Image (tube, rainbow, N blue to C red; front, side):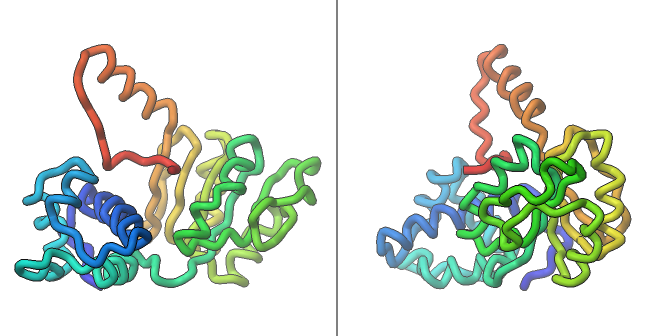
Length: 224
């Protein structure tokens, strides 16, 4: 895999969007795609596509473009999506339940192995698509993370609880946290967080609508 030092975060985010389009092309039995086609799908220029991909190696073929199967395999490898990765979810409220039922995780090789909550009334309830088919007590969090060597976690808890749980996850060995709590987490070196604040996203859309600007941000977060 290419080293990530010096690679702009937007380029990495666009890589996932390129992969989504390529997988759709693969499903239509397309053998090749051009940088122009990828640029139109993602909303950037041809030159930006080529620049983004150049961070990770040489992929194009003169007169042919990009071979879909080869590029899909390479992008999955770069993004770490070429192997199944275990994920835990903390929080079984309304948002947590929606995330439990989201089939896109499994399609992308993310295996939701356990769901945790500190509400005794929720513990023991069905956990939708999770491998552990019942919601578990938050007391078991560290033991499950260590047993299964989990590196990725999703936080769907109130802001007041997010920081403490993030620290527990980091201590247990988690290295990446997708945070849906409306708070910026402070984490130790070696732990990466990505915060999805739906209210902030709506504020950004409201600004664009109010000012009459066009802001089709294909790099934005979202569950599609």
